[in-house]
Image (cartoon, rainbow, N blue to C red; front, side):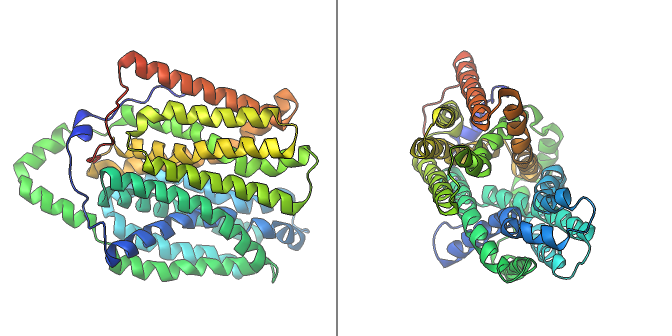
Length: 428
């Protein structure tokens, strides 16, 4: 079970400061749009080709091991992202967020469209792994830039918006992939070309936070900077707890999207329309949870036990469900909780990072989240084998979520870390 999450340092809670960039106007709107669009690109990679996997399976039927290799084309980007995000974070801090984002967005298009011309299944899987490499850089850069540009309420607002956009885009990309796939299994790969439109806009519209940091350094003086750097160390201990919690939270987050169709099938529901509607309702609830989180004027850490408890209640209802409506109700409750959980975890991680460490810290957080996503089906499969049913495995995960919530609540009570004050205005 993940350990307790230490609170942010007092300076991060009490010192108010304005956002680093303007938070209104057309330039601001375009900047936010680009960051949200970039944040959706890894989601595109995760779901776009899902509807055409059967057609790919038929095309490569003569390839040995195709039954296992074709699904790998869908999942390998997430694995690559989880493994490489920490390294992307180190590069972000060294070469700059904006520069790496623009380069990675162009490479994302090239690697993403490669299957249009590749005839080897092995080559396609390799290109998909490279998509994951680009996704690691894009996701880390976009999240880091949100942390650079905004603070306090604005930061929470846009991190929650990032969750909402990612959740909503999954449904959109699934529909787009299915529609494009009707013309052939290669056609959806053309959608990756959209990043060639985003890259030049990012290069011209997004301000470079490194320039702002350089101005601050000049104002502080070289001697003060040298002394600060000598005493500053990466907050490994504080970040370890939130990353462990994020790994577990990602399993909670992805259970309903991944397993809902199977749970409905176990109840005798085979109509694709009904399954699609149920999944869409749950997805909308995730967006609703993210909106709710953005409106709550509280620090994220004290909210985590309650949010995990909501997720656990939803899993409990799904475990007990003996009808489709009750299963959907449980999924809705769970997804309201997960919609709040993701931005709460991300905001909590951001509050522990200075500008110099934000790329590396965001990379570690991203790796933890996508690592949890990758193992989610494996954990539930193991649970199903142990208890004899998928619903039982979901119930076990719900019990684990309840225990984690109780552990966090007890730990915060023990150290007196419950903070009723409004969300900090300075989280940098």
